[in-house]
Image (cartoon, rainbow over all chains, first blue to last red; front, side, top):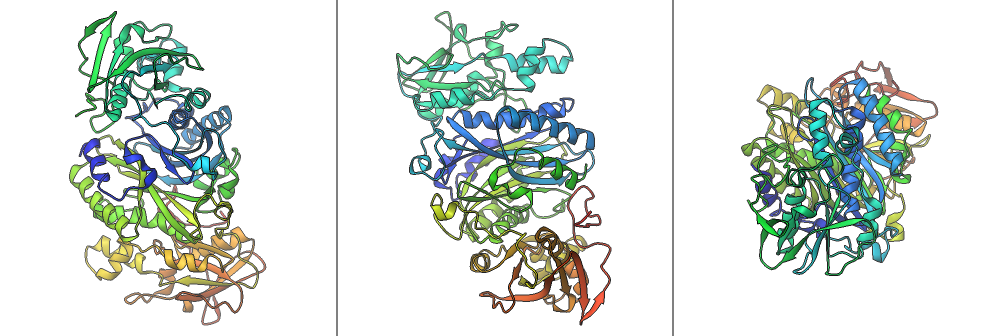
Length: 313
Length: 313
């Protein structure tokens, strides 16, 4: 069963009012914003990736989902498979580092054993509070976290930071050599928590770029019922990356992608990379001229591993 | 690294105030009671167990943790590994059945792909509200859910329902033949939600019996800083089970185990099976005479799979 078939069937089950139709990266429960991501060894990280970096990435990717909702982090729960003492110890070092870096508390979790040789499957669930409010207040209980579905005709598409660094870093990790800063973009992504809190009250839609700028832009447009055009020449690239199309179809950047009205002046560093219009689908331009869509819009961790990802499929 | 070593190191990290020192089965976050359990194929369920029953068990075991805190269920999040279309479809059928049976809403989750042949690792996170209060209220925000650490000298130890049915059912599942009612106790455990809500305001300590009556009684005593004696002759056994020691060391019953003061009259069917006293550790009696402790106190899913479980090790 494909991921989209599975999720379509999940949508036939009784859904919580805060489930957002299973169409967002977070849910809103009792004044808390909740997100949960699972990383699988050999799918979401390389078996050779250092355990401390896997811990960092597990936490950072979840915090990135909270960042995209403008949430303050309340804490995280960890579901951890014990398998190898050295790896476990290194994982704990990385966990301590990332929790310390973002001032995040551990709430609880579960440890399990794995059959010998089984790939690790790690789950983290992150809890946040909307707009920095204390939970339980009337304000915090509202579902004010910006959804991915709020982009409107005429909005511009913006992205924080740079795009493509993590994709270049993945290639470096596979090759075993290369630029350390790009490798760090892949192994130790930085959740844009402060940027998210600054942007959340101002934007129409927001999500993080986890699977690639193009596929995530297409997902925002599809969820919002509008079309989007991305200007490849506008995509901000980090030092050492010069192929904008490769950058825009690589995953794991964890920058914030948002829709904002015309004339918007972002309160944090961000780059305007496209625009929304009536219609549907994704279009590309370079220096004002149309460019054909690539076969792969991004990095999809679903059933096909790294397959072709068409958000309308 | 053993589970206890790992958890000891987790305790050195910054803990959320609602983490309860990582010593309970639930955490309290923003007025919500949260618990998360992971099931591993080949560890927590048999590869041949029907997928629909695995879904049932995944939900029921988490609801059981909420039941032990007297919580009303708010909803669940699912982290699901896609691998085989038929299994996935059967899992969804079981998920629909268990969510319907307990009127539980789906909040969200994550789907991932697994490398070929990898054992399934399924995580569910369940959210509840204390004592049936609306979340966000002053009352709900308190950490009133009974902990496992509240047993006092002089308290009696009680258990709901019967013990040993799931252990007998596991043997039947392995043998492929046997009593259907006992098999159902293993494959479709019943979370004691109504009983938990009735008991929670009245008891000193409560937890569910997930790993075996003896090991869980010993854990409650250790967490409470007291000793406990279990009377094997008092252990309530289901029809078809007659070995009380085997029953009391088998896991997966998901009955509620609780400590209550002398003279307590339970509001729901329950059996008094022991007593707490000053000191530490677990002792067994049968018809008033001391009985040696068995080598295995229960079923431990930790590093050793089904190894000897000493709660003080």
